[in-house]
Length: 417
Image (cartoon, rainbow, N blue to C red; front, side, top):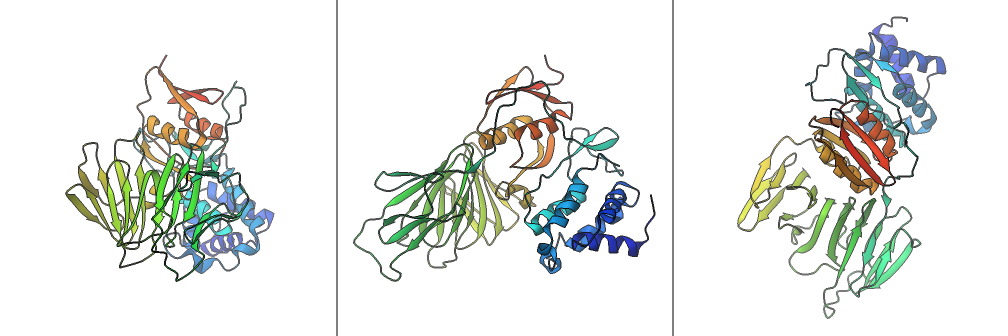
C-alpha cells in the first residue's frame, strides 16, 4: 500500500467529499482508512466536514454529485476488517461508535442520502463489520415504523392519517386542518386576525400506534414530532393566558416564541413542563420507571406538585417513580433526539431496554427464555434497517441470541439454557 504524505491525504479526502474522486482514488481512500494512516485520514475527513462546528461552510458542491458520496460511503461501510488502534473499551461495552462513524454520518446528512449505516462491533482484539443474517429462520416481513397516526376531532370523528389524501381534512372554529404531502399535519387559521370568542374551546388528539410516528404543526406554529406509541392532546385554537397541551409516550417540541403566553406540557404521570419558546424532548413511556425532559435550547421550568426546578440546555429533568425531581447535566443530546433523526442510539443499555425500544418501532412481541443477558450494549443504527440486521449485530457479540416466530422474538442469553 502506498504511503501518502499530508498534502496527498488532504487532496484525496477533499476530492472524495467534493464528488471528484475516481474509482481508483475511492479504492485508495478505503485502503488508507484501513491502514496505518487511517486515523490521520479520519481526522482530516472530520475537519473537512467540521462535525463539531458549522458543516454548512463546506457544503458548496456536495449536492451536485450525490452518487459520488454514496460511492464513498459504500466503500467506507463495506470494509471487512478495520484495525482497532488501541481504543480500549470496558469489557462489557460490546459495541462502540467512533470518529469514523461520525464522518460517514455527516456524509449522509450533507447528501440527504438514505444509506444503511453499518455498525462497528468490538470482538476481542479486532473490529469487524457484521452483515450476517439470523440462520435457519423463516423470513417473515417485520417492517420498520413509518408515518402512521390517528387524529380524533373534537366531535369524535377519527381520521386515519396514513390512509387519507393530502389536503384540508376539516375546518374547526376557523382553523384548517391540513395534511401535506410529506405526511405532516398542519393547523392554520383560515380567518387571520378574526377572533372567535363565542365558540367554546375544543380539543383534538393525535395517537401514533406501535410502529408509527408523525409530525404536526399546532395552531400557534409550534412543531411537534411524536415517536411510536405516543399521544398528544391539544386545543384547536389556543386562547387564554397559556398554551396548554398534554401527552404521553415521547415527543420532541420546537415551541413558537410567545413571551405573553407560556407553553405548558402536562405528561401522563404528572410532570409539568413550562416554556416560552424553546426546543426540548419529553419521554414518558409507562414501561419506563422515569419521566425525562431534556432541553436543547432556551430554558425550561419543570414542576411536580409543589416541587420545581429550572434546567438549561444540555440538562435533563428526571422524575422518578415517587414523583421526586432531579437534574442531570452533560446529557448527550444527539442520543436523546436520535429517534427524531431516524436512528436508534443505545449507550450502555441492558438488552431489556433495547428490546423495548425495538418492540415499539417494529410492533413486535418480545419474550425472554431463561436468564436475561446482563451485559451492557452500545450502538448507533438506522431505524429503517430490517430488524434482522439489528438482531444479527447483537448476536455477533456472542452474548445474546434470538428466535423469530411470526412477530414474536424470543431472547436468550448465550450462556443460558
